[in-house]
Amino acid sequence: MLRGIEEVVRLDIFSDASQSHSIALARPWASGPFTSDELAFARALMPHLQRVATLHAHVERTTSFARTAIDALDEAQAPSLLLDPTGRVVHASAEADRLLHEADGLSAGRDGLRAATPALSGRLRAVLARAAGSSRAPGISGALHLRRPSGKPDLVLVAIPVRSRSLGPAIGQASVVLQITDPLARAIADPAILADAFDLTPSEAILAADLLCGLSVVEAAAKRGRSVATVRTHLATVFAKTGTARQSDLIRLLSRLPHRTRPLA
Image: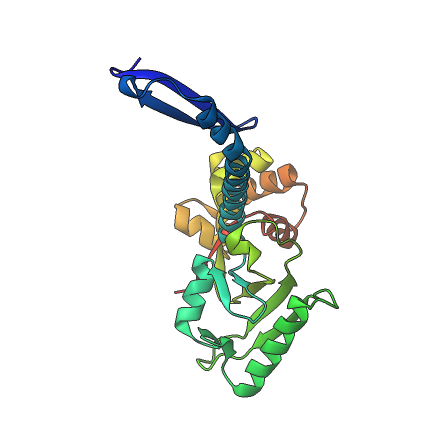
């Protein structure tokens, strides 16, 4: 017991399986015990305190869900943007942010996303508006390609409606997920994930990662200081373990796994 404290009243406001909230009211010896009127006032406050605590717990949960969803978006295979109903950026993954800063065919401004020309910007806004939908009509996915002034291959964009508004403040503002494909981006595979997924040895997993990054068998052999014959032997084992028969089938399978991308130098 704290020195000088005669009486403590604890108000149990909120509790569930993961957390609880309470308030302790304490008064010194000189003030005497809590009166019946004071206790009645505390009881009258309880419903209001409980509503606040319940709302706070809900916000904490939905914010946690939002962070998890955004983290997953950042780890997605394609650069991705979360857009609000007007086409403004709510969140950008690291790779999408890089593309926006390059402003080579796609950039972001106060009025939303812009393409290289007014005509392409108009087409982009139309696709995003259809994906955002309205109170009368649900959103519809759409796609388009955007020319890049640098002469690099066109960016390919896919706009997908966000169906849920219950994932917290950041995602709750979003109406569209925009996935961007840069034809020059090269996949970066994690050999450890490939090894776990298909029971590959370290050498086999590294070979699979090299092939997914676009290297040929000869290039992979040279990069790792191995003979082409050894690499082909490893490749045959990788085929057997992944249930594929051709290199194109293997790449198609591996490309479906989560991985990062990076622009070619």
